View (cartoon, rainbow, N blue to C red):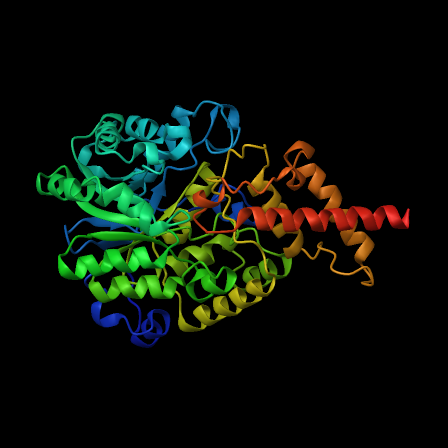
Length: 474
């Protein structure tokens, strides 16, 4: 799938990275908007205009930029973060500037959804892109019919047709069945959303008409559904691309971190075996691979002082030759510039760099953090709990060594205070874990398939133990 503008992998390195996928590879996030100071140093440079790396889609001949723009975390007016975190209006002028800069620097793949940014992403994306010639960009959007209320044929087609209106286009380049495998019963959800109502057949017909140029799906969760859709492809070629989560932590450790998940190595190699291009989401795991423990940051910066910590994750996710593009949700200009510096051009990982990151991943797995990507699909909680906020504070303290494990530890009191004070500062009291009733409404919405109530209540018990210990000593 690589073209003349794509740097070559030597055979040894290629075999090491892709576990023998070279024979079929030629057939073929999301930056969270958060990071430490080291993450923005590289973006003070000005990225080159003509150095973007492209991969060629074998199904259409599309030359797709290796960096794709995820329109999931659009900026808000007044610089109030991203449109997943606040009800403030989207800053359309800034969106236009970001899109213009991206296109000027070679980015041509823009990924959105009817569900992103409180349902406003497609509209904002359409405004920004419609100012450019249609052949300058590829639009990817999705059937985001998660709620059973939208599973009827009538409601689903209404959602589909509205995407054309919001995006101001008469065809969609890359159209996805969104979040396949999500929910308590991923198989039943898939059948209800796409088979029983005839929607999959409808989409195939739309592709024949030219309304859809490439048909694919994004995968989260239930591996039985993933295997089913690929088995369907074996009988009758359906999928022109598939979107999966791939990063150096999930490559071989996703199932170790959460037994309900599947390693990216399996997901990727199943696509390569069939010649299906992969679109990559979560190269930074919702920012977890850019906001790292200090010790790991030090090691990464020693290897490449001039590069951001995030650059390692982006190079890792972009190196496999079966990858068509990887997505990053770039809220601010410094994120966009840094990513362009990382990927324009792409310098594929060497074998020893691959091993270095595998060692880093092993260390991170030992931390036993909760695999929350801060996607916020679990919100709003009916009881007001800031679920991602609770998880992110716990993970941060665990990574920094501020999770006191035993009163006998020499640093127990210091760590306990840091945890409790930081908890109250980062999560308002009315939104903390002690308000969880275990209703389970959040579980079906988690792409990482975390058993959210169990984890929230475990953290609440831990917090109470720390508070009781403090009262006992006082």
